Image (cartoon, rainbow, N blue to C red):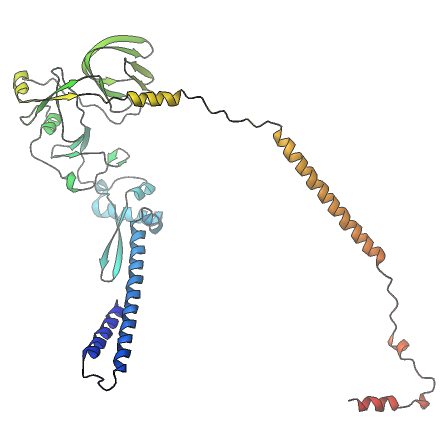
Length: 399
């Protein structure tokens, strides 16, 4: 950034010289040189800005990555952070999890401090208030009327409530919800809140008349179901013995483990017995049929026609299985044994050739003759007194 500021000052000075008609009046070439310098500085600034933007983009991309905190915070450092938070806010305000589970809660963030990017990690560990989460099902009563909530879920306690569209992330037995604009706690009177807390119908409760054309089924978990029978329907329950009964109306069905419930349209079974909660039992409420009939609206609920979907599913199920050509069990022996045989023969042939060459070289190697000694080459003269020096004089001439 300081380099960009210096370049901008140079650009301003160069522009003043170019725009000044009195400057360099005698030689206009200097102005053109200043103009070229001006263009070079602009190009340098553009390159610096582009490189800085690329650096910022890379930094932000790394920060926003879901695995950024995994590479920046070790288990040891995370443990110290949690202990520090517990010492500051108290153990009751920190969610108790395994250290590795905290990585799923940490959210990376950043902010700018001057020319630097400061990386932060948001830890949603503080439980200010706890609420009970309820799933709101549309179940008509015996008068074919029901309460239709604005959202499928509500979190409530004695202090307030909040409607929710979906469940928050679950850790152990807790649903951890962040503070958002659509998660603001409400305290004004509400029909569902009053019905759950005090088990009483409030004046704000608006009943809706519902007409079902077929049986409706809602699965709460593998053990609990809400079933509405618009007409008398025969039920078959198989659980160590077979029981038959006829039901009409809306029921909370509890299916024991390893039991089956059969109707003419569906079959319910409980094999794993995974329970996500417990149903809320509301005692018998006083109900004025005429008062609610005058103020209620009417809704017709029909099932979606899934005939074609069922036909396609049946077509896929009834298709013949693909016949995969089976490889003979002895096919492996027919391919590997000849290959290993060829390799073994090749090794033996190469080894034999190398051995024959080695012995052939030893046999063809000539006998080494005795090397003559210095005395044999230069024999001593018989008469040392008659020795001539011409050779020595000749050697001296060659130097």
